[in-house]
Image 1: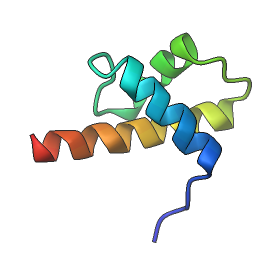
Image 2 (image 1 turned 45 degrees about the vertical axis):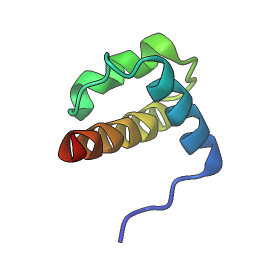
Image 3 (image 1 turned 90 degrees about the vertical axis):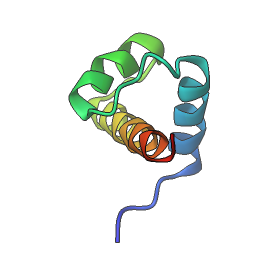
Length: 65
């Protein structure tokens, strides 16, 4: 079982994906700088959690398309 994401993480991630859908990639390392660019995230741990969730959403999107 994975870790449960909080509403804050989900809300920020879904807003970012909605606004910048075509710029996010299905790899974690490519998404980290994009999170820093588009969101005002103050610490590294929060940025990494959001980047991981974006990566997960992008991988799921590819499977269904």
